[in-house]
Length: 498
Ligand SMILES: *Cc1c(COP(=O)(O)O)cnc(C)c1O
Image (cartoon, rainbow, N blue to C red; front, side):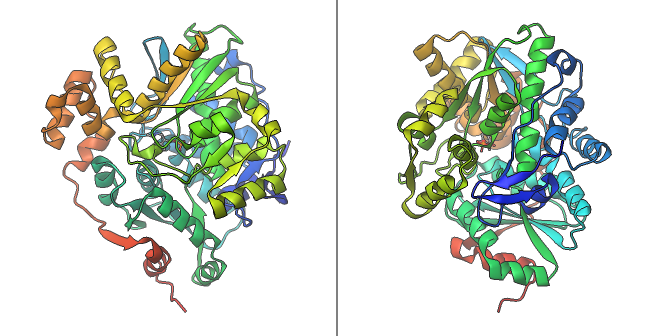
């Protein structure tokens, strides 16, 4: 059966999966959502016998119905290959009663690789299918991990260019080094004087600038987005929840039909929304635990029903979650509103003008699948140290936020349901914060000495992604003000400004 996509702000919109992937964002400013969530008809016992790539096909073919089997399998095979340092692609590690789903074994050692290694292939295939004549320009705002993963995914992919904006002082030193050393003739990296929300708002403005869009079209370009608002990123993320459950079953950790909880360190709400979609497909998920750092907009939202971005932006040791506007939440709001596009549009407009909105009591009732909480900076550091001392397992700062929130959930509920924790980055990526949490004595150690030390104490080899940037030259050094973002895009693309 053909599955179409509509916009969260206009139900009259009806496009195929490939059109939604190509466009990124709907013209009305809404996000593309499937008209319904398909059921995962394949029995879990069968999925348990499949490889990651095979499970990926089973999940994605139900969402991307206008791709042929050959097209989709080719995208999957080109994405989930030796770029990952383990054949399992997303291995599970059991520690202190929880199951850590390690989503950081790809090219840039953060979970963004799970989706961004396939998106370029989905996108170029979509362009071919729709006879798009224009070269695709990927425009992306990043809080650190998306940018590098997108750059790695799109570098030297024919028919594409990629421009990444990151907050000059809002990413970790390793994240920055990874981006500014990016190779590829079609890659551009620009720092902005502002925070991640400024960068994201700036990119959205460029997308919505019709006049600029026309100038670009005349020059042979069309914009698309690699941000987690693209449906081509969201759906590949559903895969690893299905896969993880199938491995728990295969390993005898759960019996057929047993429920599990899923706990996700959350920023833009993409990863946890994918888990929500997996639940809607029929995966036996009980609670979706939404973990925030000190930028706890989502915790407050789950507690009060009011979303309020009017607050101080906090720079934390988990920068990929330093976000006050969680874009993907719009897809959940739309569902909570009973797929009412006008109701959703109104709330999003309120968010745009006042920075806040409140959902109705009826919508709040439907939030009971979710549990929200947050971890402070001290709690996050303490979690890393304690888990390491008790088990020898070292987790990164983002994963630690989720682990600490799981602890709070257990204290509050005594719920003994088995719980999967999304482990979203390698500890090597946030090494300074991770090692300082374990012991103050590491604070003065130089960067690459820290790398050796972490490898030794955690007993894991240094990831290739870290080895590579040690000696790589800086290739990108542009810094601009937020207001200059449109101009720099036109300069990079050599589009004349009139
Ligand atoms: C992006 C990111 C997150 C947040 O994921 P969302 O899908 O934006 O909620 C968490 N941890 C890490 C390491 C990330 O890179």
